[in-house]
Image 1 (spheres, rainbow, N blue to C red):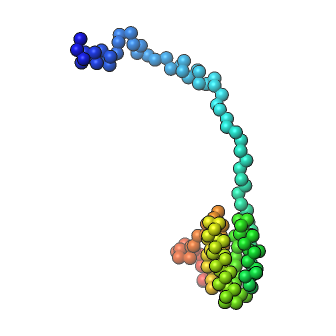
Image 2: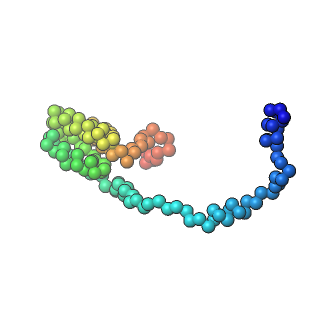
Length: 137
């Protein structure tokens, strides 16, 4: 018997092959089994965004208050109009460092106003949208 003939014999169906396969036997076994349930784990609550804190620091000594709030995931509005030039720069640098360290953002709203947003909060700018409503008559 040649090699080709042995290959053909092994790959062709024999006469005792059943044309109909009984799938019902397989399905009955799987239906009786209970699915495995994993362990239940506590889910961290989502941060509360219903609160935004406003701070008006006048010197670098006042940064601890808004730093703590931002660490807790609360968005912070900084109004720096009352701070002098050197204190203002130090406060801005501190706010930028805290925002970067906690994966948040520091957004300048105006010359004196900054918004610190935690990484869970996404700030969207729609100032150039044509769909934005205006109150001009």
